[in-house]
Amino acid sequence: MECGICNSVNIEQIFKKKGKDNLFYTIIKCKDCKVVQTYPRPNSTEKLYDELYFQKRTDRGYNQYFSENTKKVLLNTWKLNLKDLKFFNYESEIFKRNNNPKLLEIGCAGGFFLQYMRSRGWDVEGVEISKVMSELARENLKLKVFNINFMDFNSSSTYDCIVLWATIEHFLNPVEVFRKIYNLLSENGILIFSTCRWGWLAKIKKQNWRFMNVPEHLFFFNEKTITPILENLCLKRISYVTYGSGMTSKKNMSFFYKFFKTIADSFVKKLNRGDMMAMMFQKTKSSNNFFIYFLNAYFLSFFYF
Ligand SMILES: [Zn+2]
Image (cartoon, rainbow, N blue to C red; front, top):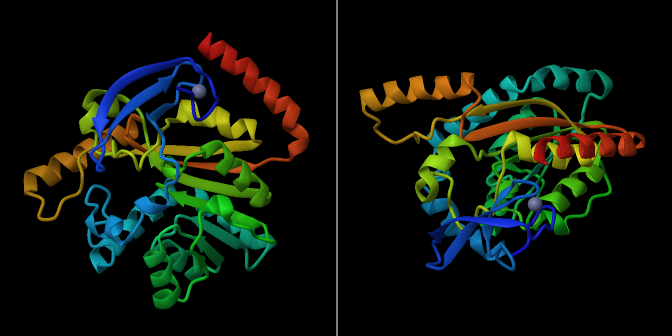
């Protein structure tokens, strides 16, 4: 067993979980970088994301992905994430320098977020591993979406903003994904992502945690474990927010469920204890590379040893 982040073999097994493919997976934690992971990792992830994936998933609002209501819920979450991250201040700075900045979304599904950002004046492109989803985005919304695994994606341009909504946990090698993102960002470019957050809710609920979907979810980060990975790549953390109390939105929620969900959601957000998180990073000049590297090495040794 080897860590998929730092290659350490210093691994702790936490629990087992049966996947949707009826195989058993072990949830492991690297004792060096502390990232929680699914093991074994599949050889390739492409075949997990066919049409059924988006039709059948119910845990993250992908049930009836194409409905107007789903679109509204997704858009509200993204807009709230952007507001909480103070992205709109950065956006207006970007528009002062460039009136048609470029944005890339990795894992753009049917393209609802790209459509929204295009309406704000961005020149948008997307990458989507699901053939059906990428076709829908191209045909219905006339978006420039490539049906390809991001690791095989080539582009001659750089981007002022790169976004991944609940996508990084699906990749086989998140460090390589972030390295590639760094290379695709323009100077001072912004990286925004959300991912499920390994915290107290996950630790209590274990196999039954709403995001413990194996083998689709391969890495479970939190702000402490993911920040050093990105700062080693010269991506500086600007802001982050956690949200979600673990109470999933349901159709026909009862008054009491809705009431407690509202209270629980605002409580975990204030305490920074949600089971989802959104983060914003900015590309810094690589001339700081060595300085940041040593600074991180210093803090890591301080934290972990
Ligand atoms: Zn590790």
